[in-house]
Amino acid sequence: MQQFFEFPVTPAFSFESFVVCDGNAAALQFARRIADPADPENLLYLHGPSGSGKTHLLKAVVQTLNVAGSCPVPYLSCGEAFTPEGLSSRFAGSAALIVDDLQLLPDDAALRAALWQLFNDFHGSGRKVALAGLYPPRELPGLDDHLVSRLLWGLVARVDASDDRSRRMILMKIADDRQVRVPDEVMEYILVTASREVGELIAVFEALYRLSMAEKRRITLPLARECRELLAAGGRAR
Image (cartoon, rainbow, N blue to C red):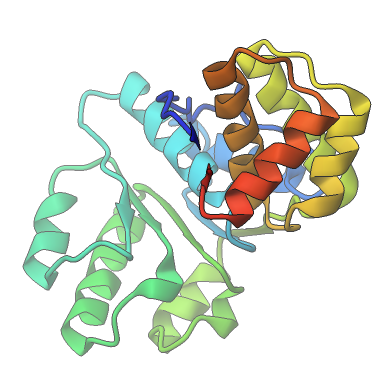
């Protein structure tokens, strides 16, 4: 029986580790401005497909602000379970409001009102606000019209790394981070057979890397094909 073994990898959500390409350069520039306490710009909204790097940029903003300031800045995904009171207390005393996955905000009037109030408090006091979601502001489901209009006042950027050049750059960066050599034919195989979604592309490479480590074999085209078969079979081959 062959089996994947977990080798924990802690991603570094920093601006330096972010892979820059044509589809995300503006978003990176805007995020750096929000992370700079001396920059007067204080409102950012990022949108784009899953796995494109929105969360990476938001967490890089959090990391940078936490290094620069004395008040901890929390990160919140709307995919988490929280109450209006919990939302308010989570950001009490924070220097910035950082909220991800706005498309997942529950259809709850009290939660939406609490978020709107928080936004007003932070934006009105000149504190930094960085939000992200899958869709442009006007396409976010059920979001308060007032909040939608406010989002359009600030910096808005689409984050998208689904083109072939960007996907290749991401794979090369991951390989460099793992200090492994990936032959061109393996790179092409992964790009052709993996989904265009960046998150899945990364998951495929990580699976190949773990298989290579577990079996102490070089990353080659035959190993990449075996890995694909294992993934198709649910992660194991008998």
